[in-house]
Image 1 (cartoon, rainbow, N blue to C red):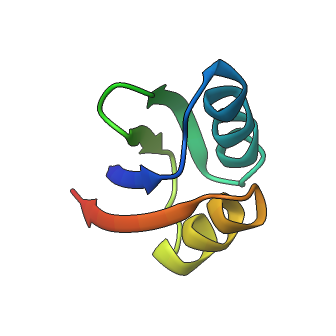
Image 2: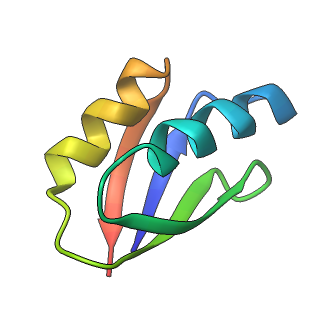
Length: 68
């Protein structure tokens, strides 16, 4: 999965989003790109997009579009 993340401006932001996603059950192999403004991750079981959205928003960032 790929999701756009808005509001990241530094490596600390990348670390915050990475940590937020890694804590979700079913999410693995998280890669966050500051340059692309996105997070990519794999799922070992279905993870609801709203759950991912809430985790990123709770970390202080806005979520855009999801792509498979």
